[in-house]
Length: 121
Image 1 (tube, helix red, strand yellow):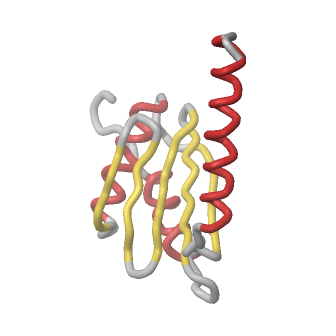
Image 2 (cartoon, rainbow, N blue to C red; image 1 turned 180 degrees about the horizontal axis):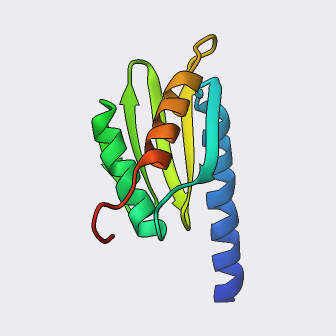
């Protein structure tokens, strides 16, 4: 096994196997997912994400994290994530079994969709 490509391939396979086994042993805490998707009044993805950041703060999400892919935070026992594809927002809210995250998902979705640019975006 002196071939570097073979060693690299075997090493990659071992990493994938280890990650798969770890994923099987790690319990998931969320059991429900609620989501809404639709166009916004944003001219592009960057502005759509800024609308999502604004609404996360306005709707009292805690521990807000954001990057160029999305915005996430928590409220009550729910975890909310908002992402944009072009000017389309996708709002996803996860929670424990038996909890209804739909009202929070709808609240955030309607807020992002209702936001507009005042001057220029």
